[in-house]
Length: 124
Image (cartoon, rainbow, N blue to C red; front, side, top):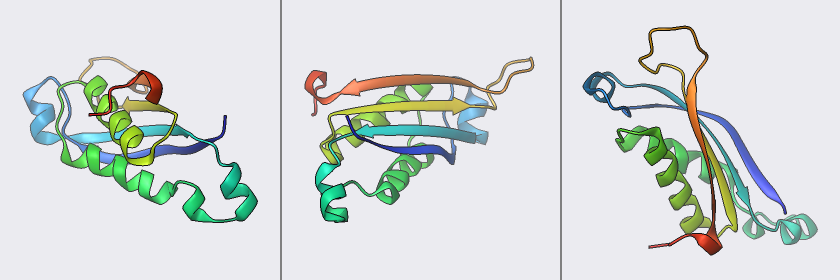
């Protein structure tokens, strides 16, 4: 299956279970992979037969910046839902990374990864 990949989208958001996280905010990083046949785009060299990764980037950035969730699981779910509905894709993978999680310890980031398929997903 063909795929479009946008890696390491960085956006400032206000997601977290703690009040301070919702007030102060922090950087979040997202990777998204959209699965859809790209054969027509490849054969015709026509962007209208594909998905604009620019549009995908701005959709993900907008959700991270302008929505608020207690859980990064909910953030990932909103991104997956938006991409499935807007682009008519077969499947989407979303990974969210939170390097500034309030943990007293040494780590690179905490994160979640989800996979959603259109055939098993309610699109309302």
